[in-house]
Amino acid sequence: MPSIMQKWFEDVFVYGFAYWSAWHKLKWKKLIVSFTTWDSDETYVLWAEQWYPSEMFLISLQRIAAKCWLEWSWVFHTWWINPFVEWEKRQELDENIRKHSEKLLEKIKSL
Image (tube, rainbow, N blue to C red; front, side, top):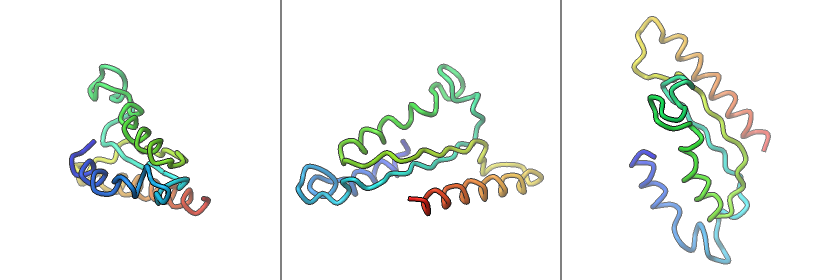
């Protein structure tokens, strides 16, 4: 997990607010995990370029969700969102980002 994201979790998911309190605010809220990677799915297999399947990166989020009584609702992952793409491929990148955003918004509206 990126350090800036870890810091956010440490600041937000605090004792008494997120868990172990009669008033914890996150209990039974729905959690949607949406993320992109800039590589192909072939690189996210055991011992490949990224070393682990993409699902392995979700384990810490699953543990946080369980501790806070969050409902694990949906995981949405899009491959090949590379911000360093050549200019000629920029239109394809923009289209992939748009599709990811639309699908995510559709899921949020359905909850």
